[in-house]
Image (cartoon, rainbow, N blue to C red):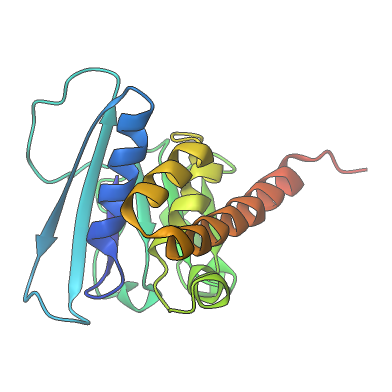
Length: 192
């Protein structure tokens, strides 16, 4: 997967946490960043590979199976969805409807239920007290894709952060997980 954001939003940490959570599940994983000017606010991309087999490649991910967008101000300025698999997943940090931000043509080929928005910044402020959307987006990613269990992410968070900070991050990830899970269930529910 490819994670897009801006310096200071925890883009690199997000990839690392996801890799640790996958490794915790007995899978192979790697995470690495790609910096531009390396300053707060500059566009940043990080990558995470997860596989059941050993990962031998070390190149940037040009054809991701998932894209996480931590900062919607990048829409229209960075080719966020370049190379996205036709069966891929898209997760965007927003409380607005995605149709207001991105042309629906961007996602027309993706299967139903593979695109979601999550108000990650708001969830981070409410639970952690900082506007860093990375951890809520990881919780949302767990719900959207099923690639990594929320419990594995919670263990990775508890390893990375001190007790109180870890628990606030687990709460933020759990809130995002529940939000996206409810959204996905509503879309799968039969209509009368």
